[in-house]
Image (tube, rainbow, N blue to C red; front, top):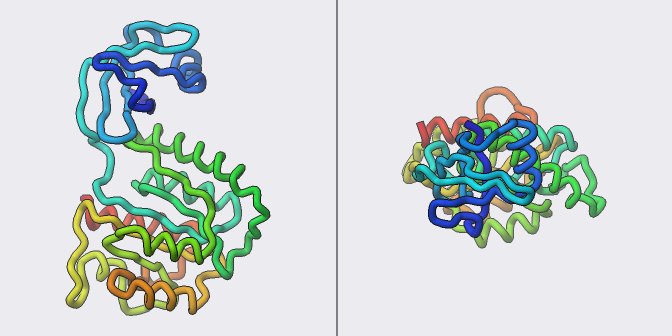
Length: 255
């Protein structure tokens, strides 16, 4: 059963109004849904609704609620991916696959070795990236649509990290050899193991990797929460590293 997303103001007790022209067109023309067909709806915050189509008008698809339950396919662990900006096609792949793997939010970051220059038009790219995230969510039937944030500088990222109350900040660093992401998640040494429901910042460098002082700044400023981790014996491409790390986090904390 395909899933659509609505705002809470479109939900009225036992009725839901699917008013987005794009969603209405997709449901009625592409999927050829008719009155009486079942549709799954998410309120993007907490609940999923089982519905049937009661009426199709020129402005709305009117759905009758037959069941409501909390999200069943949404990870409890909340991971924000700070992704060093790669070339456009690679970033699209990162968005699509990490959304499928359960990321909560994706933040493109311009770092010292980013090979792509920011010419002030990233907002247009962001619209496309958000659309890719939206489509990926519908395919994998998650409960929320992860946000693709506006691009940040490294400085902006540092400021946001200080404002957010993350349980851990994991820096996937190619020069780290001894401390693995498994160690970090399981509380290597005297650290407390992370649990399902933790809020985690995952930082991935761009194609050129991190500058050493970037990693040092993160570890120095957030010494109680941040650690550099290795993802294994091989060096992963930037578009692979975030996916691999996210899969490891979800395996360890969610399964």
